[in-house]
Length: 205
Image (cartoon, rainbow, N blue to C red; front, side):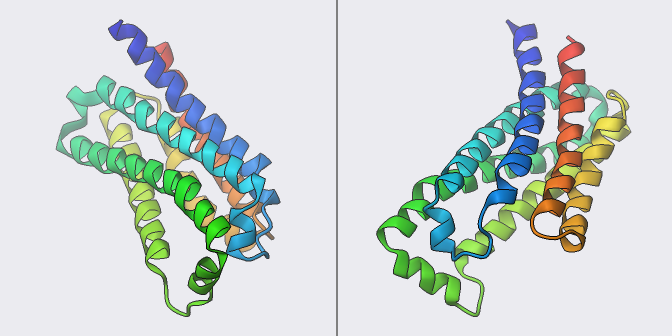
């Protein structure tokens, strides 16, 4: 049973990478970014995207536990710290996506004028600040965890290097390429890192 759980954690992380790519290649580029937040939130593509994003967060949440379990004896204090940040960041991401599905979309349907008022504000609204905190925590956690994984020398370097590169490449490519295609390409790099690390964890059992 224990070995099966270890294998499942590897599969889970790999699926998190696959779903990240599919979401950003198959759904995100086709969201109407020029529309108001209300129009986006009430659309079917938003519902599908956020639902699959919540599932992806669950895959990453489970996957990181199995990855860390294999290197726990060699990760040291930095490994413990980085794991906790990434673990909490993944949990926060799940909460964020869950909120988008069951609160933001419902708000857009039931009280669109309230959501429009929030979008029209000159200052950041609390939900926007919350999103920034979540994604910053999530990205920082996985970058630190990937660095600790490289230092532990239990896994091959390619997976964690791609994860780090993906987090840095996404905002850069988003600024360079038109529309949401830069984000899509950056997330493809990130996804490849999760897939490689997950498959290695799966094969190590």
